[in-house]
Length: 100
Image: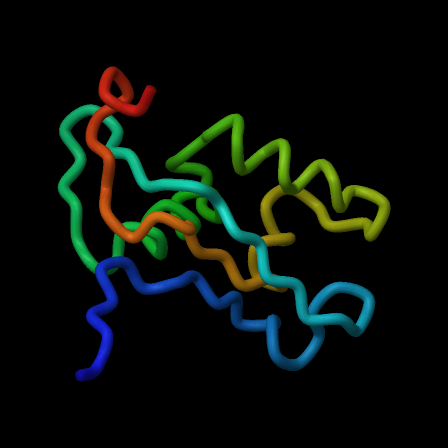
């Protein structure tokens, strides 16, 4: 039986060719949760990271991860173009009030 992917991972367009300092980096988060009024879907991870890139999303978690790699000189959220990201738990745990 083929596994069911509930949330497709984010694969930055420069992940395979450039990575970070020539290394492919995969970042694993813990779980998905929904912002107020947001809908779950296979593309949730991609929507969130795309939102970080265009500035329409601003999540402390993603900003902290980016700051760990600040020595590599990435400006703003361009960092996300160079990495692979997915969450360990495949199911969405709900809204901010339900995540703890």
